Image 1 (cartoon, rainbow, N blue to C red):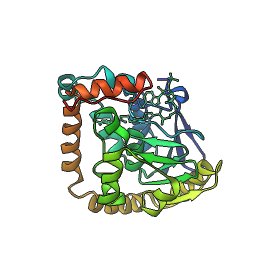
Image 2 (spheres, rainbow, N blue to C red; image 1 turned 30 degrees about the vertical axis):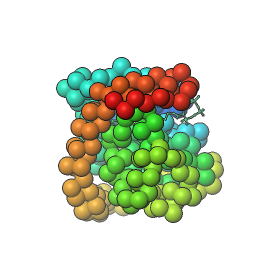
Image 3 (spheres, rainbow, N blue to C red; image 1 turned 90 degrees about the vertical axis):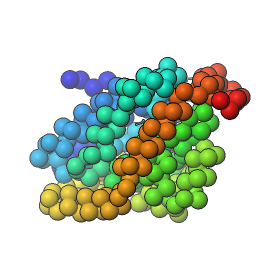
Image 4 (cartoon, protein in one colour; image 1 turned 180 degrees about the horizontal axis):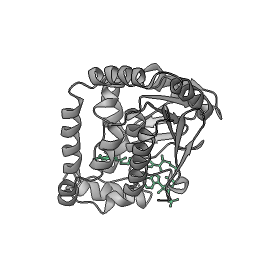
Length: 259
Ligand code: DAK
């Protein structure tokens, strides 16, 4: 089936590239986009010629998070009962082949979480990372309180999640969020070079190393993620969520009522 929100390419160096392609809304991660990404990952995982995958949002923005317009229509009971985008995220989290996130510009909310669930991140100087969900009256729902904390430590994760502050590439590098900063316009190329190098290695060994790092690093992460997901659904029951999202759409500051 033809993709509407992403572009998938396969290079003869054994690299699959997934480009998020909703530039008008900063690659906002609507459910259909996430379904396309998860299908692409399933296909690339099954392709024996592919040894590594790169996810990019292009040279302007990685992704500004879940689609806020879609979130505005979501309430607690439907999100909880239908497990809002859980299925798609689980596919992303369980990918087999190594994935490199190549980040330029904003990687916010679900965009930051998408980069964090990749095996490593490289970025250029324009990259900006953050978990601004709190400004919308909701909380991170896909790893922001979990993987981010493991990556940058408790103090920085608390600051980022509680203030919604955005950090730049240098700060992200200092805190161990990213593997490498490269010069502007070369992040995708650099990611492809790294992915091509990985693709020359023994695939079972690559998988063993990746699983060994992830399975120990992520020990207890699954229960943490489930806890976080349930808490995220709870935020959808708040009036403050309605106000936070309305304020964003109306381009004004939110007036939260704490309920
Ligand atoms: N959703 C929808 N549209 C978005 C968007 C988003 N996340 N981000 C930006 N846009 C749209 C804007 O509405 C605007 O559209 P028009 O008004 O032109 O129609 C266009 O993109 C350009 O945005 P701005 O005009 O705002 O551009 P600026 O350069 O001034 O600002 C910005 C860029 C990225 C700082 C700003 O757009 C912004 O703050 N965006 C929102 C960032 C944000 O709050 N992200 C967190 C969203 S909540 C879960 C999985 C994931 C999640 C939850 C659960 N489970 C598995 C359970 C994730 C939740 C989130 O990510």
